[in-house]
View 1 (cartoon, rainbow, N blue to C red):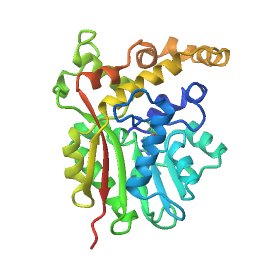
View 2 (cartoon, rainbow, N blue to C red):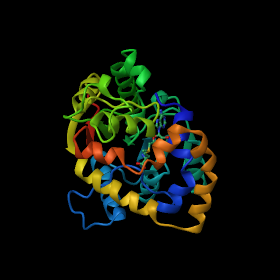
View 3 (cartoon, helix red, strand yellow):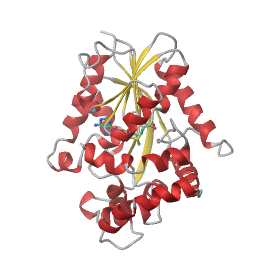
Length: 302
Ligand SMILES: C[S@@+](CC[C@H](N)C(=O)[O-])C[C@H]1O[C@@H](n2cnc3c(N)ncnc32)[C@H](O)[C@@H]1O
């Protein structure tokens, strides 16, 4: 699993720049354009929230758990709909930002949440853009990937009533993924092997599932797949919008970027991850080295 140091690298370091660029409580996962790229990023993220709410039943009186809640966009939407949301994240900056907005967020490993953790179960569970971090390259190398996923799904099923639903949105390795042994940052620039390696530098400690098949298979003992929709092309547009927002200049952002200069000078990983000038994820989606799925699961009635 990506640990809190890894996630601080990916999320806490850029916390203020992120919030200045995208706004407080902004989403940091693929939006739902459904191919209509005339929508604004905010409209497409709102469309995603509507979809999640409809799929897992978020409404007045419902209690919903968000595993890997980021800066709290879904929790905010849950609150707006009159439901009660609880979130977990491993980024201390995100937890602090969420709490400033009155959201019930805990610094805790999503994989260890059980019915005892928050004093009972939940009517529904959501996890957007976090599953990517639950298995580490070390877990994969040790042959533990499937076990990590199986344990997580068993825990989630333990939180839900029969018929209760999980919304899971995640990247996976896509149909054109190359053999893992070929992935290398020393491979020729612009090769598939280089782009996947660059993506891994941006998200250290994280390793993706091999297609949705692996997710469905490992969930099967606990949860049944209801539906799955590809969000790959929508994700490419989301990244395009993020990059243009991050690129908008402001004196505050300039100051924050200057404060990151020591990291830039001392860490080759930081330079590669944040200033290499390319979006590895976007290229990987275009080349179908990556896929993206919006999946809905249900706990079978006994
Ligand atoms: C790409 S962000 C997505 C955030 C949010 N769900 C959204 O849609 O904006 C990934 C989130 O997963 C969290 N995360 C990753 N691994 C985690 C773990 N094991 N336990 C809790 N949170 C985790 C990170 O801290 C971060 O908040």
